[in-house]
Image (cartoon, rainbow, N blue to C red; front, side, top):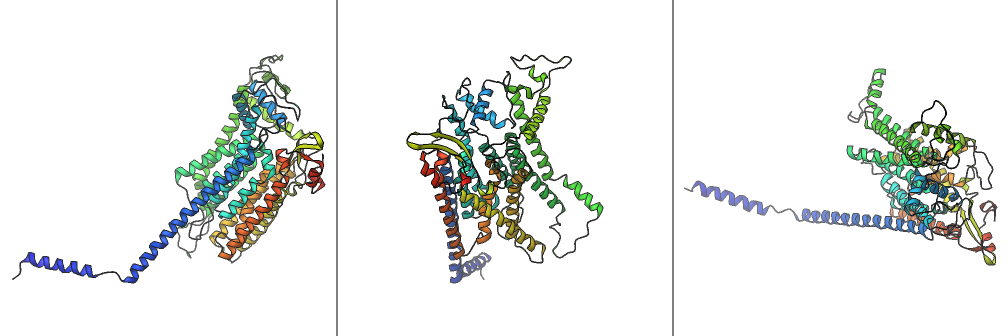
Amino acid sequence: MDEPGARKRTVSHARDVDEEREVPPKKLRLGEEEEEETRRRSRKTTSQDTMREVVTFVLLTCLSVFTRFWKIQHPPAIVFDEVHFVSMAQWYSARKYFFDIHPPLAKLVLAGIATLVGFHTDVPYREIETAFTHDGYIAMRMWQAFCGAMLPPVAYLTLRHGIGVSYWGSLLSASFIILELSFQTISRAVLLDSFLYLTMALGFLFALKMWNWRLLDDTTPHLQRPSHLRFWFWATLTGLSIGACFAIKHTGLGIVGIVGLVHIILMVSETFSPDPKKKKGKKQKPLTIGKFFEKVAKMFETRYFWSGIWMIVIIVAIYIGAFVVHFTVIKNTGVDEDSMSDNYRSQLVGSNITMPEGEEPQGMLRNIIDINLKMLEINSATMYDHYYNSRFWEWPFMYRGIVYYWKHLPDGYHECVYLFGNPFIYWTALISTLLSFFLMDRYFHLFFSDASLSRRQKNLLFAVALCVLGFLANYVPYMFVKRPTYLYHYHPSLYFGILLCGLVLDAVFGTNPTHLRQQLKVSTVLSLLSIALLSYLFFLPFSFATPLNDAEHDSRRLFKSFFPLW
């Protein structure tokens, strides 16, 4: 009779033998190897894609920096509105009063740079072409060049990682901004505009990250909810960016309105959308008046509502804070003092105005209200005729630019800085914007008909609509502006028009096209960029003030309106 221990050992040994014999079939082993090979190739492809993204971003940034910084010191004389902003930087440094129709944030930054580099305050620069006698102007130009150089990489991040546009679509739009000559030229002078455009673009990017949606496959939720901390992080950056934009120029109200409107739409949509937990096909109960007000009450408890309040607080704080610094810096009498009350003027050092009898010194907030009312009054009353005025219907066609600087040289040559856009990019952006209206009409028709749209199509519709909104919000107000307007007023709309170039490309060819369509897509992008590059090189002398003779000037005058004055 076997011992119990021996029987256990025998059973255990038999089980071990059986387990050794249970070898997976050969096909399963091959299948596992194929899956592992697929995973390995996928990891390799992902690594290659990541490397391509990094290399592309670095190259775009380097090219942008080169085009904006190259020969930044030339011409070494006052260019166009540098006559205003260089002087204002000097007045800030000397702590002298002056008045301007724009908020003070960007001018304070320029003044800080001028003070750091020791830019003199005793030499007046009140005429265009006045030669600089101190190289501090280069540092101020470099700040604007830096802001302008960051615009293309920010556009790439906006399309690629904010919206989810394809690699080639994102590359097309970012490259177009690099090759856009009016963006380049305006970023090479001591002005406010490059800083304005960068804060606008950053505000748009951060808002997209806050909303956290992108063009993905049909299995991905349309509106991915970011984590609580991440949501408030992007909301804060959005408020800081659009607040800075509004504190640079009042035209920054465009991006504030865009973000605010979309934020409200998403808040209402999330509140009143059907409950996703309900089973599909189950009939939803009709919305009663009581349920309606209940949902409205809950809407004011959402993070969309409170993040909106938080962004408003940030915007107001930046705007008021800029004026607080403005009035803190200014202590001495200066120019345009009659723009402020006698009460304020009497407090300036060197003033011959006495404090009105019975009045107390005004508080800081009262001064901010007074100067803003004066800014609105002067801005609306500014009516003059200028040779380089242009109207809103001319801008998309690149009809008329602005001569920033002109100098006669020996042997019939001239140096000219001309704010002149790349015509091919202007016209391509216009065509893309018009095609976007067609796409929106087509998708809206499908959306409200029985035809079902894929999630990708819905996301594309939302992306196109958002950029069209950006274009119109910055363009339509100028239809009602009576004061003189110029080509650079079109730049915020042009930025969104160029973003639409990448979106339209994806709408035509798809984000994941077949091999043939992908080849056509790549060929289209390379062709468009080649033409844009040729146009860029042809008109480049007007950005870098490269000497040209009369014949070389005239050869670039494709239309008489391009260069209305030599």
